[in-house]
Image 1 (cartoon, rainbow, N blue to C red):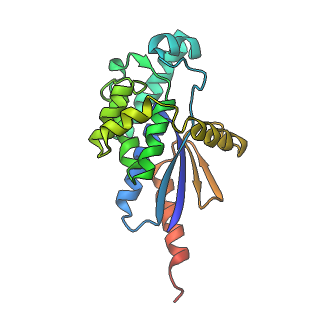
Image 2: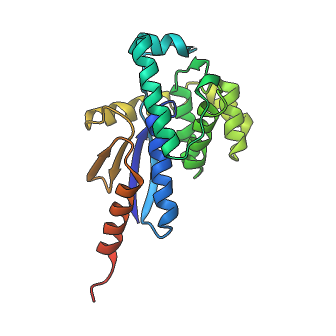
Length: 213
């Protein structure tokens, strides 16, 4: 098996699109060699703990006109990738530090990918505030985690230092945008790669593992 490390943030639209395109390739190649691990990378590490209104965030980051053009591009790419999302339902741009803690704990239980997918679904399709501890505890419970345990951990400082260290390490390695995919700790793909690219990568890896005639 080959490790596929993915640096992503659930509030990043290109992470949503990139995951969908990768998922298509994995479904088309059920014999793929990847073991997937998700790694924390906050798009907005200076975001206030309680988040901020999404409209204000977008206008501050892009300007009103550019924000509208940016989301037309995102919506077009999402539609092309077969993704349903409802950006009109999103009211808050959250701080995702605690969401990354939940993903970290899910990894300990072998539930990382389902929890990451549930976080993106909650944010992009339901407009949930995934910076809110109750929302995060609900998501963890829905994915089979112990809700009371998640609630207690979120109320503490558990693993805040671990998340910070992992993100610092990622930036020191040169990760400066998400999604970033690292294959076998050697090859890097940045951005929401097309499904066709992933199919080519998988086929090449499978061919390398096949015995010569």
